[in-house]
Image (cartoon, rainbow, N blue to C red):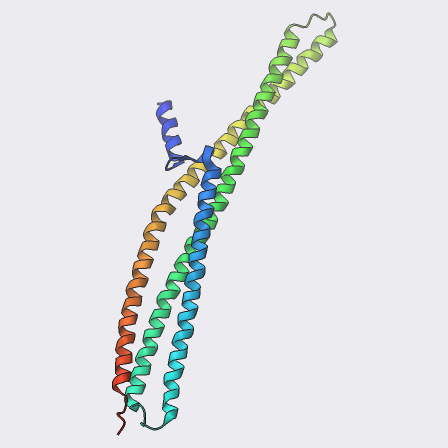
Length: 244
């Protein structure tokens, strides 16, 4: 039925308790807040990535410089080569995990920016629809006034009667035109609201799942990298030459 269809359309234009057409400004504020949070997370992740990369490079350079202390006087050469190569792989794995996390956050931030743009489009569509609705009401009021003026015309002049009739006809055409514009504006508003609601629902579900999976993956890889790094340092420590 028409009521069921209207109910389904209204439900399609909702995100949780928010009705897109009426609460688009609230939704925009929420999405902006999410965007700021994701931006801060991305910045922090990038800083962590840069710091860990710098730390790894410093450690590797220090170990490579150990060989300049003497031929086997401090560290067994075989242990040095093996330990440095293994540690270098571990550092690269940790850097790759951080890079993936940074890229995931950057992607989510880009989606948040797109959502903000979409809310702007819906807000503009709502304003256009509101203006079109007011224009339609004004046109119908003018048409009704012109019609009554023509019907109550008591002038015996044929030219005056024709002029009143033309005015009434013109205002009727304007009212029809305003109705068409109002229908098109309302349809555009509804389409944009439903599209935004659908995108927001999908984004909400995937954002939570994707970020959770990214965090679990990075945490797992970082834990494994720390385990390997500890083993590499044990290997280097075991390669120390005992002083006589």
